[in-house]
Amino acid sequence: MMQQVSVFAENQRGMMEKITGVLRSEDINILGSVTNDSAEYGIVRMVVSNPAAAVDALTKAGLLCHLTEVVGVELMDEVGNLNQLLQALSESNINVNYLYLSFNRETGMPIMVFHSEDIMEVKACIERKGYTVL
Image (cartoon, helix red, strand yellow):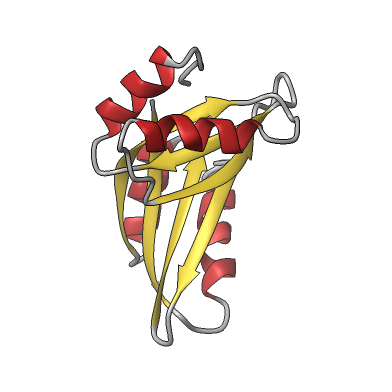
């Protein structure tokens, strides 16, 4: 399992630059991310090289953030693999709240990052279906 940094940020010019600048100053690499926004606020969800240090630095910079458990699954980069994984979760009656893409820096393989209400259930289901959880 992995830890994700979630940043609640005002939807204003320069906010992403501020977030990435804080991480850069702490030598923290963004490994994967997704951004959801509304008219006034957005949520930036990221898997980073040092989640605890990222939360500390971003909080000191005045941003509201927290850590969340997510599941990372390395998949072969082939047509239909993500669909097969999602079917396995659906067959186990597991809802995926959101997902996004990262990459294994050592192998170059895609990693799908998942969030669901019951992360342990997702992990168990994925492992039963023969996938490796990171």
